[in-house]
Length: 450
Image (tube, rainbow, N blue to C red; front, side, top):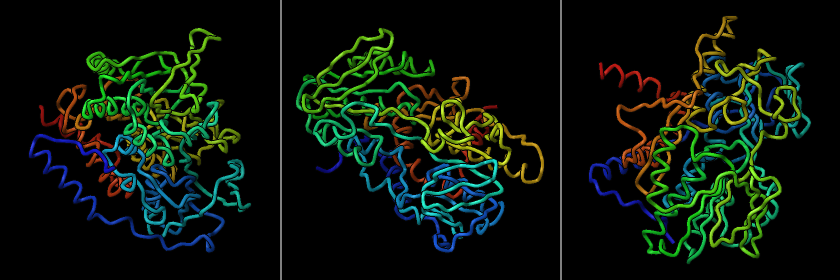
């Protein structure tokens, strides 16, 4: 079945979306790099671990600082994904193919791609070791290894995904299963979960819930659907302004929310999910489901947990303002793998990349970093097939909004930005090192109002 297409009533909005889609189709990928694994050196001025959003962005920026031949990326995967769009893929509003490009096509020209997995970090010797046994030395190290999905920590998973009626928007292997479960839903409980760990894009577990509710209304199934959101947290969202707006939507759409409920087991043959009640030790709750969306527990990659650069929880231990490692001054971290006390999103990575670029440029000149990261992050909370609440906030969980209007309101313009403009910005500006977040836009709007 073809993906569900959002119906936008305003002609100008349609034209805007079409323009952005056209731009995305016409924009070419990053120029191919000229290096090859077999010609890799064993020492680089800047070594980047990870070829995700943070790794590619910083490799591009470092190429401008020290030259392409002095930069290398260690990344095993042949595919690079724009994961924020998977929320819409799981709801049938976008095709999965739009989220993927080859790793080869996004690595900046001339930068060495070492197609291998990091096996060990030895910052005392300024080197890393790969799975193939190769030792690579560096002057500066950027760690951008992302976050690890721990489906196996839930009994019955990941093997349970072989059964129908269960999906997860967090993996390329299971996101389309969410859309299939949504289409196949007839009547009963539609169940959505949030784990008892840090996660990337903390809004995503409830975005698919709102989209599913909207789909059930569009297809006439809503009267037979009991929508349940079971979260291990004690609140619906960490920023009060947006939490209040979401609570109003939950009330209006008759969604059941159970707090302090953590998924510990899936019984796909019986279509049952088992939850531990975190504020009642030893008590569990079994819920039957007709559709189940799983947000898995997550953690720092295993290679980091056992490394000297990690804090006690396994995350890269960096200064929250400069992104420089607290013990090793030539080591830096960016994105989901760090212990930065902010929400783990692609928007946060964009903002961090500009700060880290400036931090490293000064350190390379033996100067002290002066630019400080304020914890900016963003979560476009998709509440329907043409509505988004754009949450933006900082380390203190205070709103840090870009636009001169109340962003806690559902808006079609913010949906178009999420669905069409942000992918364009990602592929054509962020990965090219030209997008460091919307701080300059906030200043522009602020000046315009005075």
